[in-house]
Image (cartoon, rainbow, N blue to C red; front, top):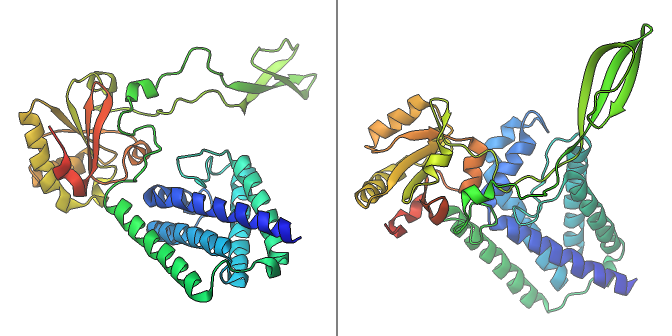
Length: 364
């Protein structure tokens, strides 16, 4: 039992630290995932949505600290009880999400590792078993250091987490796992490679035969049935290949200009997924930077999911010398974790990407 507890202790501790650090690298992204869970269509807890960012930071720091405390064997009773309560909650959450098909990605490992809902649930069940081993064998969890050293290690880990969270929130994630990272070409990210798996659908055809319903299931072909067709239900049984970049458009007046704009030799994108929630103080710097960019031969566009009326008011109020185009809000949130932010592109390849606090670092 002692050795089983040791193995479980190492596995659980390392997994919690890795999972926590990946999300701590991008707490804004994890907060978007929590907003999805809190939405009316999932847990229906809309009052928690404004607190999603604070909750995300708290949860990921707790996750890292519990992993550290487990590895050093400090406060084993508190640590194991906390781990057990946390994993029970997340196991319920991932089961609910998988069974009712509510959230397609739990965000357990941020954008670094994508898991399907059932994969997430399976992962949590395995962790639950390992933590139960720790719970019933907690007498074998002994500290690696003396009490003073354990307090120092735990305190240093906590301070480091807080400082790191503050840094990435005021700049950008230190490691970008998304398909819009610097060096990525957006058009190439939208390409489906030749021979990529295609989705497989199942069709349940309903006919009236002799006054009774008859269901015929096929994978696409219209069945030969001597009866009156009523309706058909389509179910996807296997997803096909989905390119890393999808749902990417740059629209104005109902027309998509993405292909044209991504072919620009010099392009600056001002990203503001929701102008109503933007940091307005930053637009003065945005105006200066974009004016300099235009003088250097760059084409400048704004991209937002906000209304044209609000975009025009912001443009007029802050003297912005560019037009805003419409892009899906989720896509904009994925592109960059800042509102607003600036991207510099060359023929669709992202050359620079900065938080609004780092606009002065741009080079034109």
